[in-house]
Image 1: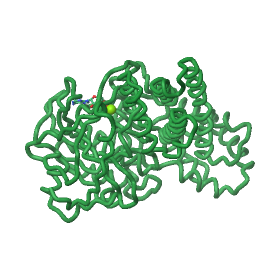
Image 2 (image 1 turned 90 degrees about the vertical axis):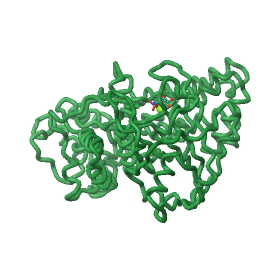
Image 3 (image 1 turned 30 degrees about the horizontal axis):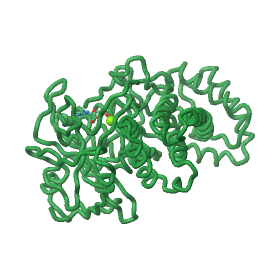
Image 4 (image 1 turned 60 degrees about the vertical axis):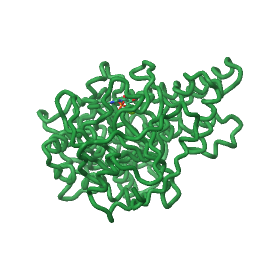
Length: 485
Ligand code: AMP
Ligand code: MG
């Protein structure tokens, strides 16, 4: 296929030792049809998808025809899934290549659901439409909420059915990521018991994600510190908007600090720190409040994998590694506190801040308050008047909050502006997401497109956004989500 799309491929992953990937093209599909294309994203990254036919685009985004310069491959990785180590790899994904944008940014362009690979194990290499719609919707929502994430460029249907709980329409999502290097990629390298492999991955990752680390005296430590900062930032963002990832396995944690692999993820409506949705998450290992702890656990697996490069002496390496991982709690806590202060308009640092935040969260939990709407109501500039706020416990908290706000060094207007910038009005509420997916399963994509439009401006209220601000009725609440692989 000639390069009508303006792809500017420069795929460096193939420069890694051969154990890290398998070169293989996507499996052909019968009748690819475009469901949706992200023309805004295409333009942003310098692709031209407008001067061609839908037919050509469907061939491109199904993998039936490869664009010029593409060297398709699937990546090897391992991972701790729910605490247990497994060899994995792209079982249903093909990297088309690394595209360099006009601004010089390197991005992976990957098809997900594009057929079997040597890493498919017992899987069929395919994806169903519902979960791909979910990934598209939520990854785009996260992007517009200001959260680091992979993005979605296109969805197609394949014209073939996939067997899941029923026969479902097959689909392929085109994913854009700053890279697909995961904690699990390092675990894979460490498992090969070949220090050379590990070193090549370390150097590659530093070059790609934090070139400044090349100058540090200990590159492995430098990378770990860098990832700890990025991952703590990321989890703080999730906690800001009530996002529950749902499968924080080490293979779903990136070195770039982007959110990846939207499976059974969901946003919390009513605040409950123990919220988890995933049908496969028995015991709530990946519940809302556990996310920082799990991030730390996953980073400990990264450190373990890198031990031989941290220090030649195994004991010293372990000691240094433990010191590193212990730092995570403080790093996270400071960032979380700063974020929560902003959510309620507090400037500066006062001794009562932590209690004030805790009391609000406790009140929300005890009163089944909606996470998103509570913070927006507080950002309104006026005292909220809904029935839920009439409780004496809220009134007491409100008075304490107001007196704390007196200690701010800047005006109330400054606080309100800050709160309105950090507290979204619109999140992809689960019952709405489910509605979109079930309409799409019947070939109706209007809800999907309408929702996407609203999700583009999550901090703005207008006529269109109103229906999406309403929490689910008790009967509409979604308690369980499915991985839907
Ligand atoms: P995920 O839950 O999407 O993060 O996937 C976990 C692992 O299972 C990855 O190695 C995937 O490539 C693999 N996988 C998931 N679904 C399939 C499928 N239908 N066919 C083959 N491999 C799959
Ligand atoms: Mg995954």
